[in-house]
Image (cartoon, rainbow, N blue to C red; front, side, top):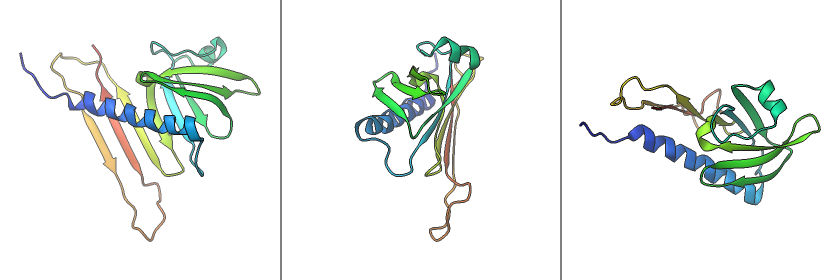
Length: 155
């Protein structure tokens, strides 16, 4: 049996840990400055809890925005819970980190992307693509930023 270091899995867990830390800080102190988040998640993932009407409207994927109005943000090792306002209707969402597909903070042009694909072979190792563009210090960023793409394996 071939053994390999699971870099893909380790990177995936590290990126989830980064998101957990960011959300924990926001839960404690609020959003600093112009920071805000666009978070896309798979609504079919085990552990996702959203209102039935939201699940009907977003049967596979949903993007939420954490910016001006949110309440009761709670973070644990598996994911986070938050109450958001949908057309003057507050709704509680429970989102496991394993359901995340993207996490973007456009105020600093930072983003993470988690991609999933079925492993065709047991020995297939997840591929990780990391792209970083840096703008010169005297020039404002123009579409540059950091994007991390993770191919998540599933058996």
